[in-house]
Image 1 (cartoon, rainbow, N blue to C red):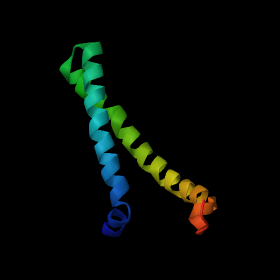
Image 2: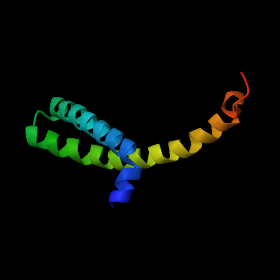
Image 3: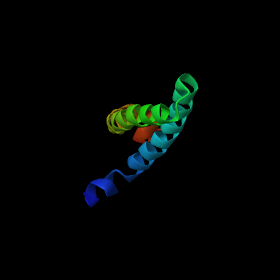
Image 4: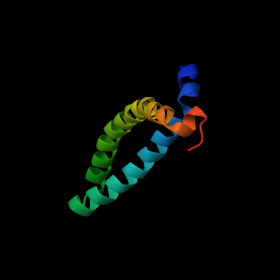
Length: 81
């Protein structure tokens, strides 16, 4: 497990940051809509939790796709642009 964490630390940190922002926004919106503190907390924890997991895998796919595009650019091959 520690190897997994070390290999994915930047993505995990970014995911955690995104998670906290998402929960905060979701809680404020849910409270504005429902006027109920407990309901807003429940809603704000459920949806962002699922989103955080999806975001982590989105980032992993993004990291795999982007290097291929960068490698094809002339400057990436050492030739002047």
